[in-house]
Each structure stands twice: as C-alpha cells, then as structure tokens.
Length: 360
Image 1 (cartoon, rainbow, N blue to C red):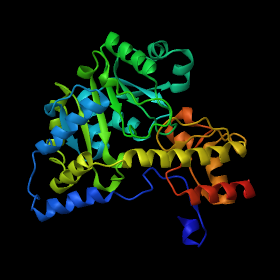
Image 2 (image 1 turned 180 degrees about the horizontal axis):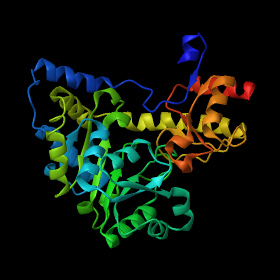
Image 3 (image 1 turned 180 degrees about the vertical axis):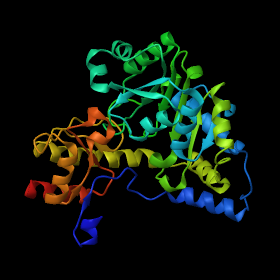
Image 4 (image 1 turned 30 degrees about the horizontal axis):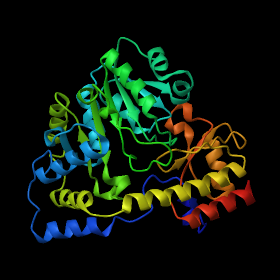
C-alpha cells in the first residue's frame, strides 16, 4: 500500500477472491427481492426455498444425502466454520489439521479452547493418510479439519485419500469438519465431498460458500450441511450471533443456484488458463511449483531467493513490486514458499512475471 501511495505500480498476487464481478443474474435476483419487499426477518436457518434448492444441489452434485432440515444458511463459509468448531470442540480437545493450512483455522480451534495438531500433507501423501494421522493422534483427538481443494497449496485430495481419512475417522469415532470453499475450481482430478462416503454424513459438518464459485465475496453468503446433533449446535451459534442472513441476499443466492448458465465451467477454464501461464513463468524463473490441482493459488518453493518466506516476500516486493503472501503464515510447513494468487487479470500475470525476470 505504501508503494502504491508513492506512485509505484504494484503487481498484486496476494489476494484471495475472484477477479470477476458478481454475475448479473445474481444481482437481478437481489433487485427482484427488493422490489417485492422481501426485506423482513427470515427464519434464522434460512428461507425454505433456498434450503430446499441447496439440499437438491448437495444430493445431485456432491452426493451428500442431505434434506432441507440438514442445511443451514450462513454469513459466508467463515460463520459455518465458527459454528462447526463451537459445536464440536470442547476445552482440551485436539483437532488434526492438514498443513499448510488456511490461517484462521488455528484461531477458530483456539477460540473453542481446543488445540491444533498439524499433520503435514506431504507426509500423508508419501507415507499414507491413516498411518500419518495415527502418528499425530492422541486420546484427546476429537476432530479432523479436511480442506479440499486446499488453500494455500491447491492440493486436491483424491477419492482414495478421502476414503483413507474417512476410515480413520470412523475407526476413531472422530468428527470431520469439511471445508469445500473451492469445490468448483478443480483442474486435475475430481472433487470428492467426504460426507458422501459410506458412514460419513452423520459425522461430517460440510461448509460451502458462494464467495468463490459465484464471485460473491462481499455478499457474505455460505451454507453448511450436517445431521444431528451437529445441526442443533450450528443453529444455536447462528441464532444467538447474527440471527441469520440478510433476507434479500438469500433470494439472490436462490437466483445463483437456479440460473441456467455455463458460468461455473467458463470461469474454471479461465482460471486454468491463468494457472498454466503463471506456473510456466515461475518454473522458468527457478521458483519450482507443482501444478495446483484446484483453488486459485500457486505455492512455489522460493529458497533460491531466501529460505525465510517473509524475507523472500519483501525481496519480491522491493525489487520487482510483486506482492505475495509469505508461506509461513500458513503454518510451519509453508515456510520456504510464497503464495501467489492467479485470480487476477492475464495482463497482471504477464507484467508481474516480466518484472520478476528483469529484477531478480
């Protein structure tokens, strides 16, 4: 921000939201709601029409056997995550978290007076998920935070990996808190909702958001799927905090789910093009980066610049005016990496890479 205030051009790769605007059909849904005076209190768990459509989507697309009673509308995915941890984690409980991980998760666990136990994703993929989870578990382990596609690495867990995590959860009687914010941004492989696997719906709380799929970050609209007893806890955390989501916003969400459009696939292909462009440039610069199978982040290894990711980020910013996020903010297993978002214009990616070539 200081560089920009001083008049410099800064190539911004640090963001975490879609580059495009909210689709017109969503805005039209909001306009119709306002014109129809749909502005009064809604049920705190969400308007019935939206919960019904979401349940249909969960059954048909995610293969999660949810009914409308198993759906609650939330103020973004974050409120769903907050409610999930509050509903599951008691003081002294431990939560297994695949690492590197989205930064707020550790704080959500701590707010529930629980303890985060980091499980290196690379170790799990190399040595087996059940064996790795077992090595990091104790008799205080209560839950697993399961995020796919992952932020910051872009890892997409395979069906076989999901099944391994599910087996471990069933055998240890653990709850799975599944974060599926990037479900519609998968480039390699498939997105598997862990709650769709045998014996998992009753022990999984699944969070979704319209922020990434429909470019609705500022609308603060998400939803959570869970069976009892977890739904009662989620309903209480919502009722006694926000008491629900803005009524016209929910009608806009209904328009998002019911519109006949190829927007999701068009956007996925646009992101794929940006991913390939950014990764080719980073690897040419010697910043080795494996293909992120999902989400919209690249997570290259940057030890040739500095093994300290905060220092590496400062060097890129000062020398090339390229803004990134230090990998260490995503946990100790993110050290030595930087997070680049390719959710930006093609022109910004090309210009940023050119600046890196000239200044590093």
